[in-house]
Amino acid sequence: MQTIDLLRKLSNAFGVSGFEEQVREMIHSLVAPAVDEVKTDALGNVFAIRKSANPDAKTLMLDAHTDEIGFIVKWIESDGFLRFTPLGGWDPRIIPGHRVVIQTRSGRMQTGVIGTAPPHILSAEERKSPIPIEKMFIDIGASSLQDALDMGVQIGDPLTVHYPFEEMKDGVVTGKAFDDRAGCAVLIETAERTAGQDLGVHVVFAFVIGEEVGLRGARTAAFQIKPDLAIAVEGTIGADMPGVPENSQPVRLGRGPALSVADNSIIVSRKVLHAMEAIADAAGIPYQYKLPTYGGTDAGAIHITRGGCLAGVVSVPCRYIHSPISTLRLADFELTSRYVTELVKRLPAAVL
Image (tube, rainbow, N blue to C red; front, top):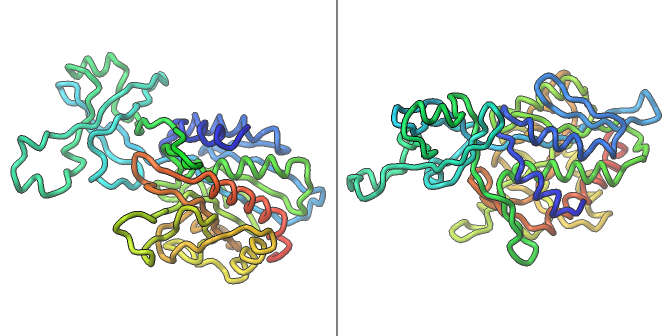
């Protein structure tokens, strides 16, 4: 499958935190031909396993999370409007006015629009401040509580924004959930590139749930896998945009994969970081550093599970993550994908 088609397929899939079934099944079918075995655990983590001929080989865990930020229906008003609450980190300023799809219990997708009181009827003071989520609602076209129920919508139904993947120009694409469907795509391509190879280690491509609500899947996945080394692959904070000084931009588009030095969840071992740098240099792959302290990833949970393990983080630069829609450059994605393949082949021998 072409890279752009893989990204489109994964971006368009529904997979709000806690409701990752659709994207999980998609990933299972995509990655299965490239590995020895695929397992799904009780939480919904997918483990695509490549075994070494040496039963005593070390284990490398590659991680990407399947979930995307979204919302969940928490109440249905008597007039058919829905109240909702976030799943994952949202900026309330950018929520109103977006089209959403609600996944009903039957699996049918119900379209809705996030609404608020129009500015014409707000006081001058109210217009100065962001609208709290508690004052927002979703209009699904229902006229009553019973009407909404008849449409199949219930309390507890998940929803996400509806922005289909599109190509823009000059290798830039836009879509939802690049955090972290970009990482999922990197893992799938890496599995395909290394298909049939004995890499000297057992490799587990772990597509995990619940990162956006507390690194939940990564923690239980690492407990089961017991990795000696882990690499988390993410879509991260591209902030090369007007109004943001260069020294405050975590990463920039067009500069290749981003290596994490430290963030809110992990301080990457110098041994690992230096080896990652050397591998990129040897392969002729340009890279950048993600500015320290911003954000956190599954590596934060993985490296302190059980007795702990060495871990690194590689990210695809994406603008506007944790918003309804993101952009990325295909060139950055392709460099990251190639780089992770090189890491799988070379990093275990360099650090273990």
